[in-house]
Length: 296
Image (tube, rainbow, N blue to C red; front, side, top):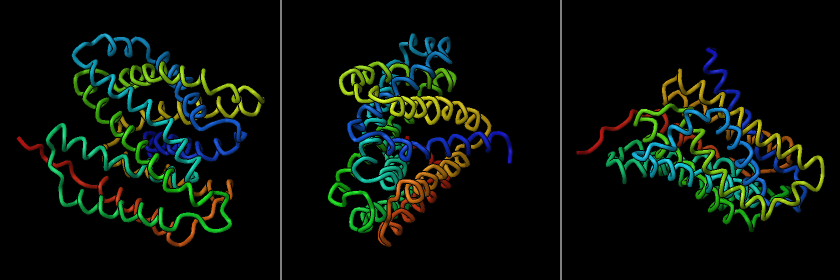
């Protein structure tokens, strides 16, 4: 495999460890604190690593509105993502959050950019929605540590996470197409998102500092799946076609699910496994589609 493919695989593996790593936090540490600390520290590191290009993006009034939209997406994403995994489990929270992202992104392109929704998109959406329904109906087995009653709320928060990430992707794409570098756009959006999340961290983050292990896990999530993973991701995105990137990134929910079962001890019943498979299939159908033409 090429270096770009390996870089993307490494980023996906790092992302896939987030839920399992977060499961080792004490119960006193809320998912809001986890999400806020990850983005506050990781976002600040990404901003510093690309500060010149990021400041250029921030100063550009022509794209400032879209930059703020991208930052708002990154504020919503980590808070709802970790809360989703806390309620629905690592496997379900991960797959719903990531699997719904491309569907929301297509809806944004349809609504804002007037891009047609193709028959392939309709098929992929139907498959993915069926999968999500099976996850809610089936979900975890009796011997799983996840409370079945909390799964619907976790799925709902996963959809919020998917919408937030789709907003970030769509808005940051507009900024990049306006002439800014991907690294500068990413550093600017993540840096801006870190500001309100730092306030959240100040309010709910005290339990993170209670033990050395909690501090260590928080630092790992910020430096590994946040900072380093996005640097590797930038390497892959520069050299690979977007269709290739979206298919390779399906490794993330697969890694997350395997770790949830092997390490965390989560158990899915047959309906849950069928739902996961359908969601991944739907996203694959969407990811391998050609870009539709815009309607004028």
